[in-house]
Image (cartoon, rainbow, N blue to C red; front, top):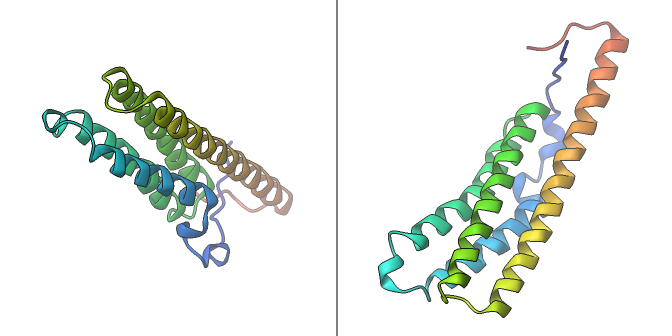
Length: 147
């Protein structure tokens, strides 16, 4: 039986903007926005739109998940964020293949991607650890699970 405990809002005083993963994802988003300015006009509603949307989804899912106050829900949104992060890197692969960005710029973007990925994975693991500890506390206390 899965036990869910509500996360303590007192730990959220700084908001999602205090998360290192969100800060680094925002840097990645800013890189995308700058790079899109150099893409050819015919890509405006194609690659430019897709890469902007996926990169915006990274930070947006982090923010939304952070506001859920439940370990499992927050983890789920961070997993969605991780998927959008990978989608953005794939769009960068296309941009490189099409000659819209240099190999050097691609490597810098890939390095930032890897940094965000590691931080996101670390936060997901942290949330899982917190959930497991919360589950154990509830089991020991004999309290029923919170739906």
